[in-house]
Length: 174
Length: 322
Image (cartoon, rainbow over the protein chains, first blue to last red):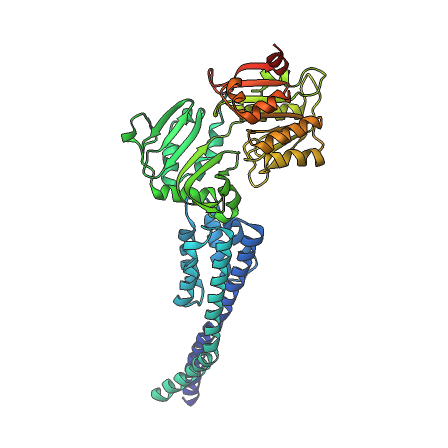
């Protein structure tokens, strides 16, 4: 019977441990995702300020040179606007942000930064648009920095925490 | 003048209207698309359309009404959504067009903009808080210039300097466009020649993102958005035209540029706003230009039998010498 108990304990500990490690990965993913969105914003800014590319096309181009899930945000928004079904930027952007929420590890505070864009994007002259995108990139940089600072400590807590919790459960069961 | 394909209006104009107004137009009887000239959207005012010479309003069911009370009233949201559609949600990409007061749609149709203007020095920097839109349907009627073409391009001779005298909405742009196409293509009277169209307001070629939407012929170069005076001199230096075509001259620099072109041996075909020659001659700059004999013929247009009616064709030598 001992081998069965040992096997069960190993399963429980590794299960909790894996769960903890997955949690840790979520945290490091958030940093990567914010960075990807920030880089795509930089691309979008250049498309707008140097090439005067209309937003729907600029969004699709930005989507092409970024990884998921940031791609979802830009592709979805660009696609809705290209369709010409009467949707405006605030509606298309808000809808795309909701999509992004469901497939990314971003926190509400990150999404709030992006939400600011919905009311200003595309509706003013070049200078204002440049300022807007610069500001958003700065804010995303801050979010990225904030996420990075917490990442090491939190990753350790989650990864070790999983194993410790698993061991505790095993002890209690025994 | 003739009509425009129903599908062209459905594909090139209707998609740029707000969803509510789009629905109204899709319910409208297609027979009215043929004569449709203008669509007017003003916040808080009835939705108005101009079919031929008559103004109508449209109700929610897409029926034409004379009674304004039964009209669909345009909301701020309609204007906002229409502006978003016209500008592709990218006003920054249309800064120059907005400064000039209109945006051209695919097909060459123009949307006039009204709202709060922002000034920079003595120039309009931009328009914001849009309050009204005026969709003007562009028409390309091939063959509408046949009557005047025999005078502009006499058999076996070079095209002659021509001035179209016309009040607004009498079809001068449509005729000028057809003249450009015919001269470029060549006619039974003569071979095709190099034509340069200086299209300061993107009306003649109806350029959308730099590409002409109207057929101006195989030997036509277009200087889109270029000020007329500058464009005429540029064209002489770089494009070796036989004929220069431009619309609505009137400023001092335009008059000087016309004179320059005529002296350089390039035929100039252009237009001015006036109901008749007497009215045109009341403008001092124009009177001076006419007195120099710069134009060989003057063509007066009206709407008496519909847009593009040629009221009279006057040879300048007959006018000044007897």
